[in-house]
Length: 197
Image (cartoon, rainbow, N blue to C red):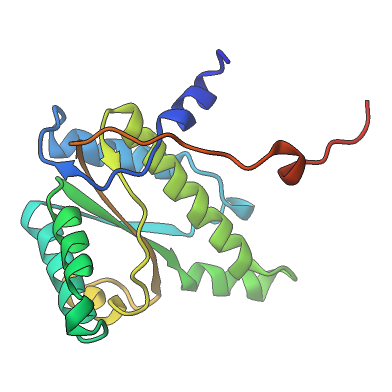
């Protein structure tokens, strides 16, 4: 298929083997992340998605913080795989912390008879996909992680995040230090139904 959007989405894959061998500067990567989020749709143009972009030591600090929280939750005898994951995420160039602003959601819920909490989650997913795909187009690997709500308080305290920002996902990113396995798909007949001419 020659559709450029489909080609970009195909290039977006989960990468756990991250490194620091990227050709773009931090400023260039930051610009990609910001523009991808700016261009992401949101209901009523609410623009409820927020991000904290961490590079270098700040990114490592986030994964060390997450590691220590998990150390108190995961049994010591089975902590090694968790520890290895945190190390792999920290090995990259940076991490995007994705949030949804609950003040924006609340204001819309008070004004309109819709469930903007649900719509906000839709916006969050679209922003995450947009950033991930834009990074992949720049030959930067990433994965989407979910360590909320166990790290929320530490994140708010460490990076002075507004209380109204609800952490939804984390995206470590860096150079692709390994290839990608084959991606499999369920049968179309299970997934899709089409009607009409």
